[in-house]
Image 1: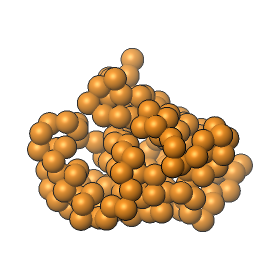
Image 2: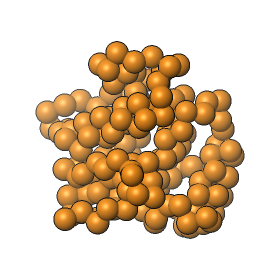
Image 3: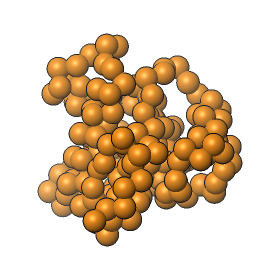
Image 4: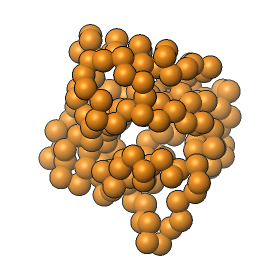
Length: 153
């Protein structure tokens, strides 16, 4: 049974051994930067809203900020800052949703769909697109392989 920590996060991802690997906080705010993201993450940590996990993803419709193995609580810069639209666009199209009109819950479900697809991704049979190489480089792809994606409560 997965130790459900998702009640404190928008999305939690557990590895195949049911250990918490990734916490995702999804917000609809756009036009943020790495400094803003670092302060936002620190505030969540200081106020006890996030459990400790190897990876933390702050997901916005236009930017993803990923921390890997960052000590808590700090204002460390994200390990990766990414353009989110190329990553989520295929999922938006499949859902028939426009990024400008998606609700926060809709955005969370979209992220869950994307994360679930990553847990079942097989690099031996599928090619990783150039905008997703950071997943392999960071170790996140291997960490969540065959894992469980859980929506927060």
